[in-house]
Length: 368
Image (cartoon, rainbow, N blue to C red; front, side):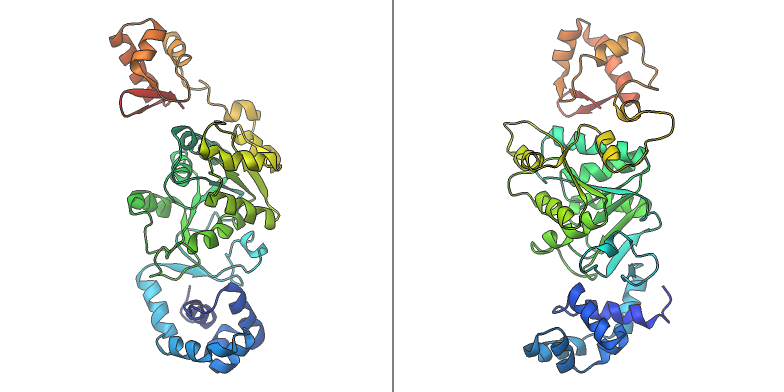
């Protein structure tokens, strides 16, 4: 963005005033005609426009501490880009929601207009939930669909990883500034997303993660997507907030069924009871959203996790049929397969190299 574009420079400055938000900034732009004029207006007039007459002094105090051009220089030094709702390149789906926000981003928004689906769920989740999220994201990426999530631990992390593993485009929406990595354990993942997708936030750089920010960012996750998939969610999960925003934004809501005895399935099962589309594979999502799979293959073949293209031997196929989608210990595999430990180890290694199974700590194996 060229520095001569004063409007986005001043829009960025307005976004740093803590008393303002997308709707109040939009009201100021409508009243004053431009971001620069709004920034330079008398604090009493600004307060009157946003209906907070007692806040003129607070506006003036905050504004005196900020220099729009220095704020912009700081963005450029940090290699952080931004885009406002009236700029070319702003996500068209997000511009349809109530109060579209000013966005900061790292990475690229060049593919932001291709069909996108949000995959969300609990931070604390089961192995089943992580695997389903990863598989769905990988399947969607193979169909040319972007995956949107929040880069939180658990389901969000698995969704981003699944998209990246299949060379897909993924967007992480943060509840803090894009210069923060939250959680810190996802620093490597954040770097991968920046390299192959985008990290976005409505919060200015320097803003730390706060509890109130995460429900707010969920409206952006759903707003960037044609539909939102809840993989695992407790009765009070933040993923349900994303689903509610999706409904308000007239977007589709999907849910993955889980174990009826698990607390992590309560939220997703409730959504299914209330009319959310039940998801068993990405084909269910693509069908509902009228997105075609890759040419020449029906949904079942395009998206199922079978042995197509793996060139498995007869012994490998026989052993793979024993291994479930949930972790099974190697001793049980040997017992059910009726083979020697050395033979089982060799076959398991071959299946792992062919990406048809995954090994987890403790010598457990699960089908992918």
